[in-house]
Length: 116
Image (cartoon, rainbow, N blue to C red; front, side, top):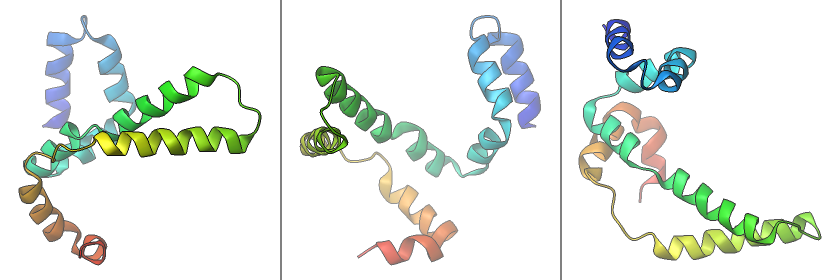
């Protein structure tokens, strides 16, 4: 079913987005794992871009300086950028309660030890 959907997507959008099709085909095993999760978990995964946001903050901080006198100086810049970014993160994750309940059902052995 998923492969048929990929073929249909390729027919409709392949000419406009060839890199997306190529990426999905090259990583099809991981893509299919993602679609194997229930909808509420998928929604949290694809709407949570905290990693991309953090990478952007770190990249900006590093690019401002270009050259570092030592590895320790680079680590300090990354640390300080992360500290500043964490102060701005105030938005809650949409549908988190529903997703957390599903996570608990699917991954209780891995997640319950991290909850208070």
